Image: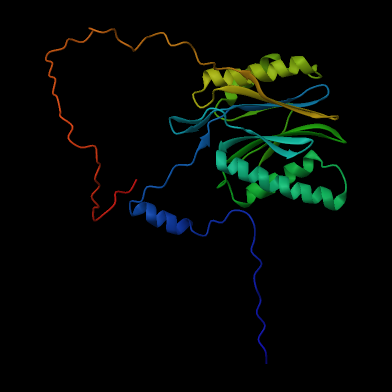
Amino acid sequence: MAGVTVTEIPRGGFSFELTKRNEALRRAGLVFPKAVKTGTTIAGIVFKDGVILGADTRATEGTVVADKNCEKIHYIADNIYCCGAGTAADTEYTTNIISTSLELHRLATGRKLRVGTACRMLKQYLYRYQGEIGAYLVLGGVDITGPHLFTIHAHGSTDKLPYVTMGSGSLAAMAVFEDRYVPNMELQEAKELVKDAIRAGIFNDLGSGSNVDLCVITADKTDYIRPYEVANEKGVRAGDYRYKRGTTAVLETSVRKFEVTSDTVATHATEEAMET
């Protein structure tokens, strides 16, 4: 009798099969590379005609600024965008996966995507990994039911609010929203409010910095403004490190003259070449 071979279809997404091996290597003394985290200020509000998302552009690796112009507002669909805080690779990879899945869903149904669909797919994807994926998201968009704004935590929990903040600078940004937000704001007033909230995070949180990016989503169009404002412009250097001649005393002067007898250069092969 001929045997039947059943091939398991590979599953997409992250794999944590080597977690135990990595833990054993860590206990043995292996130092793993550190992930780049977006110590971040991200925010969003619902205004009269749609949704505005905002983010800073500093990516940090511990106490080092790894990237001064990191793109933290990610494309999901033409009418849906998502801000990411947490581990930079996780936020980018997660949003790319969901964006691809939603595009396939749009092609299969022939309908404009809904923000609630994107929220459900993101929360279920993150809940599957129980917080191992360091992605904290602010999801915003406009569909046939109106504007929607969600926060999605790494464990899969979600909130739907008229104004939200996330990241290490979220408290400073939320203070601005709590003070000045009113329902049905006009476009320019709402843009200035989000800008000031991100600036509050930039100037009160060491993990946030550089520029302010905004994404304005309405029923008619999406306007991704990068940068909306350069919050931290490089200043003029106050000191001059070029010293005048004579600043340092010359203790001794020696001049040696060499007589050139040949201009031929000879090379000698060595047993081992130096690695660069």
